[in-house]
Length: 121
Ligand SMILES: [Zn+2]
Ligand SMILES: [Zn+2]
Ligand SMILES: [Zn+2]
Ligand SMILES: [Zn+2]
Image 1 (spheres, rainbow, N blue to C red):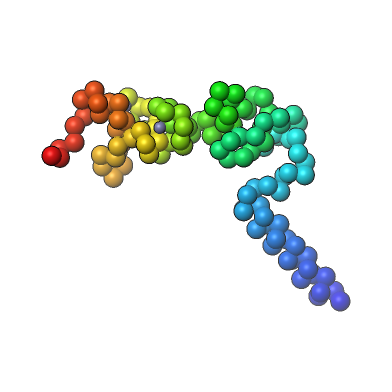
Image 2: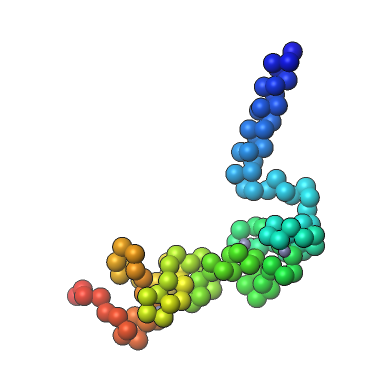
């Protein structure tokens, strides 16, 4: 019966891994520990990634955790950033940036100000 026990354990482990990758929600049992710093007292849930975070790692204004805030669009503040404007240097999202080459973006604001113009009709 040992073989049987081993395979059950393996299945349980696999399920745990699947659950972990499916939503990183295995920590839910140890509820009030901050997902970022590991300190107890996570009273907030990030509205983008769903992490449970403490006061220090949460931004009241945006409802985002520190990690999401760092990668948030600096222009509209609504979406995750995909790159940065090569003129003003701000990071921006798909909505706020216009791709001008394989690797370069420019924000719509700089575009409007005429800081850069596409060589297209
Ligand atoms: Zn924290
Ligand atoms: Zn987050
Ligand atoms: Zn944006
Ligand atoms: Zn710009």
